[in-house]
Amino acid sequence: MLSIYPACFFKEENGYSVIFPDLGGLATCGDTLEDAMAMAIDCLAGYLKWCEDDGDEVPKPSPVSAVSPDQIAAELDFTYSEAFVSMVSVDVKAYARDHFDKSVKKTLSIPAWLNKAALDQGINFSQTLQETLMAKLHVSA
Image 1 (tube, rainbow, N blue to C red):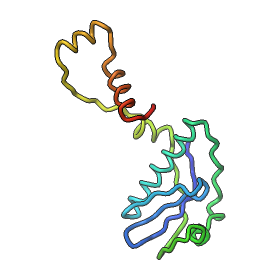
Image 2 (image 1 turned 45 degrees about the vertical axis):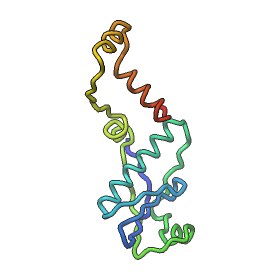
Image 3 (image 1 turned 90 degrees about the vertical axis):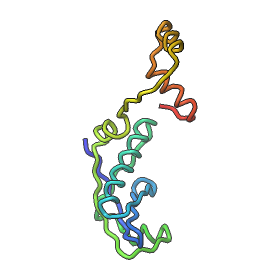
Image 4 (image 1 turned 120 degrees about the horizontal axis):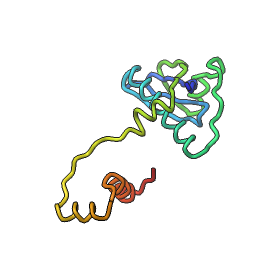
């Protein structure tokens, strides 16, 4: 299912800033317009996935006609050379599957005695590595 939100694209000296006014000023940027749109999609998908995972309520999107780049810029005391509003859409589940939840294969080496001891105990190497990395990085799944 597509999620669609209006975003203000502001052209600046070194690229574009993108702000989602309905999402508390959620923002990203890109060096080119294409890069800014790709970053906007990634930013929107990440925010909506995070809200979903945490059980947070997500505001309804405003109609594109209700969003004013001038008003957003004034609220943020922001200057720009050009601006426009565009709807940004993303299928959050598909995007998360392809970008956030995707597993990558890693090859590693451990001493033979440690491998044997772990196999004898029925230890799941992938799970153990993930748990250890998350603990070391102080993050949770």
